[in-house]
Image (cartoon, rainbow, N blue to C red; front, side):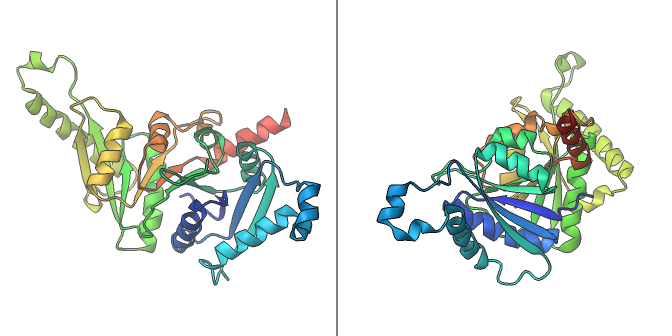
Length: 307
């Protein structure tokens, strides 16, 4: 189980902020956080003297002005947050480095960032930051729906899939209307024609084997296959896993994709895995949650800081 008690949201003062704040407010119902940090990183907070002279309103420090703007935006979606605290941070420096640093300093469990498609602005968290941050990351598209009814969890029977599946269950516990869909992609092996079977016939054989492995995988994690909507995708065109996941998500009108970051050691737990990396770069309208093993990545950061 991965509890997202401490959440950080990266704002860049663009139109994307409204979607991020609204989606964070929506998710608070499911994640029940204890603290939410809204953070904005500016390359330079200094106000030139000539502007101070021409515009007396600039006497107030720029970080305070930005905080006021952030608080006004947040207040419209968080009129009452008695169950958790909200803090605001305006920091000078490199967005990537500062977000990485402060997510570690604040012991963040989940970093929420925008994934832009049409809106202007660079956004707060490039792909390379998602690779290095020690906590889980949620990418919210600019037109995200404030709804979770269908969750897609890709399954390849590995350990990191179990992390994603566990998080899907945590959401479904809160809302009984949520349906969890499990997708497994399979291919027919090279040389299948020597068996005398057609491609379609061998695909059915592979699907049958995948179904058995799925049942065993779920039993080992204490789950029942009957509790899920199962999707078996025949990768006939040899597409990437990310493309197959993206297609399945759109075909089933998924509201959220949850995928586990690869990594069983402290070092490899920092990295996402090729499928997660490719999913991040897709022009998708579906939120993507990448679940990381925080205990491993956090211990690795502590080791680096001690050197």
